[in-house]
Length: 157
Image (cartoon, rainbow, N blue to C red; front, side):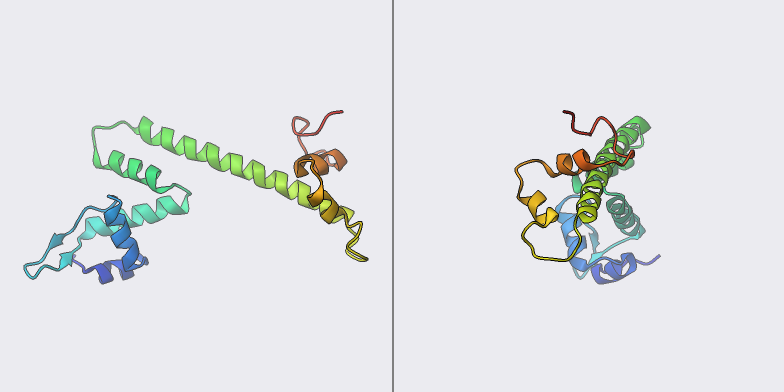
């Protein structure tokens, strides 16, 4: 493969040239060699690294985590356990977000089920629930007859 300009690299990797500059400033992409005339020239290693960054971003890794993963990749003497630990941490974070989203869905389903969708705003159960001082999760869970709501989340009393 011949070397690439920043624009060619950006097009090939389907990112903007500004993203490449950003990755360079953040230390995720090493500075490229320069041609005799001073132009930056990127190699296949830069293509591979940008693709790695993009795939990691798609899986939810943040820049700090991507930097750590790249540092591990760059050091063949490091152990896989470090990579696994970072990935397990990300998986736990994503699982927590999924639980939060499922809880939000439960609350919204409950609110939608309570609202007829017609009539004046006064007395609207959705507006009333949003205006209450009680946490919304407790509002919907208290009213829920759905057995899919874990008992550990249901309000007691």
